[in-house]
Image (tube, rainbow, N blue to C red; front, side):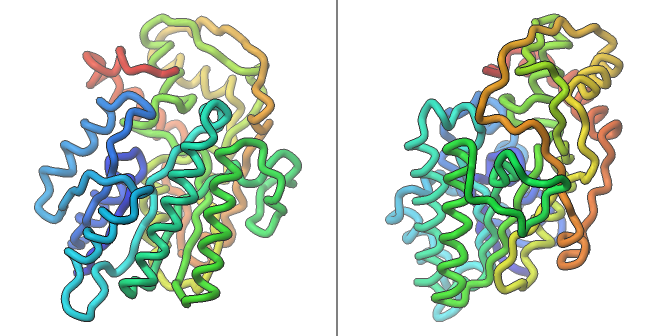
Length: 330
């Protein structure tokens, strides 16, 4: 049995990673500051599920503050042994448009937070680090499907820039201290209890409740929607030693936004009231993951097709509609 530190444990992806790690018999120490970047009822819902599990210990802490983190590492250390077999840093301020409004908090969490954790891994001898990054790192002119060796030095948003900075910090700590690092670039993750600022959650709520469906641009942009369970399994696979690698996790099957809306309409059995607004310049026109590297290095391929994943999302929404209908999706 291994012990893992998972940051952002009450988050959408991290909570599933925690569940799957415990399903495999591992112990999980979860960290989250429970901030209100989006409606906290979703974080409370996910965390409540985790707290029923005997292999889970939770610390409410902010990764931007090194002293509480150091105390946590020290508390979990036993003699000369490292406190954790690996650190999975999934805590982040996420979202392209919100990062334009407050870039400072994005850099504090995504860059300084990662730096604090890397320093503690060095100090306490934790030699495996997994970083959650983003497909937004690729920018606007990347040939599709996106390969990990494509240029990523022209990010379009502070969010993408902060994640790129964290990636380079990870390489520095690998080079200087031998920490084994897997950087995972996630592609548009969706599923039950997802982030309410993500399009498929918003579309499901808005269509189900008969509210206007806000679409930026004409809806012909495409996204490589990837189901959360597939992302969680890929994250766990990334714990294996790789030295330093950047690896895409995506569906390899991009879907046009208008087509995704039509699929949700069919599942909800309601027609969307679509309202178009100008596309944000920080949004890319399309994302599409080349996942050959994930297959080769991690033995990973996504299993859940969009039709099945959307059915799970809509079913979860309907089962929890008493409170999900009021979740803020702005």
